[in-house]
Length: 310
Ligand code: ZN
Image 1 (cartoon, helix red, strand yellow):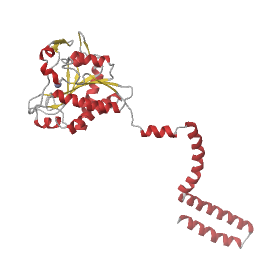
Image 2 (cartoon, protein in one colour):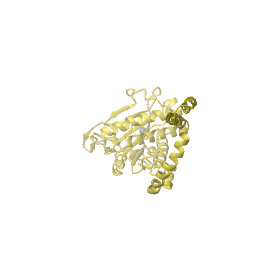
Image 3 (cartoon, rainbow, N blue to C red):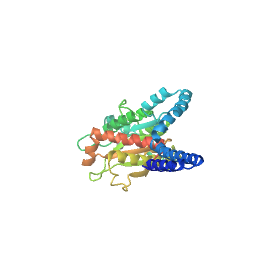
Image 4 (cartoon, rainbow, N blue to C red):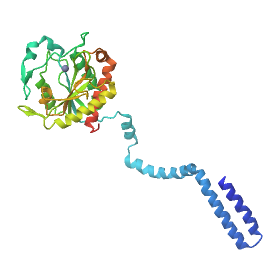
């Protein structure tokens, strides 16, 4: 609409000018040119995309050509874009499935005390179970396998402290040392709690800063706390499981009485995924689909921690 008005005005003006003098006609022609030029601007704006395309095509073609040759990467780019992202390549993560189904048959062995720096403590315990008899050790190993699969798919090297391949244990001090020997970027011990039936929810346990005997967590206390809060957030998001309604209600405790944390020299936390003695939590913990959500929350928490995110 704007270009039609300009064009019509310029034409009637040029008719008048033609009847007077040539110079004026030339001037009118200049106006026509000017008006047309103006309308061309408008039209150019209107067909901008087409003009832009036709102009841009050779430009991008000539610019794109050398770039494409320079990069020589059309195929590799396509390949890497299609490949899954491996954000944890080069990272080592130790997953510690709490307890061992065989511990119950090896009470003498797991009852022996080990040095945890701040104290001496039993090598390991049997763990708890739901009222219907689903053992904590079965839960922890199942979730550990799920977490391992997720983390390996993201490129991580995953080390399990045990994989159903020994009759009992390892002892808590050995569980910590496996993480240390692997020079893990992060370590996680998976558990489920055995609290009174009216308690429910999950919580994470981070190491207190201690320096006593073989225990020296001064260097890992801060990063472990960050791991704990990051894990807490992602686990809650993935599972919808509430923060434990006990132990202060924040879903986080700091302890100096766990050998698996005291003796660790790499960032490490425990997660108590729920209360096996609570009916609602037990229904979740025994559900394989829920356990996959739990594993995803754990894997996402570890991944975010290692990427420096929250
Ligand atoms: Zn446990």
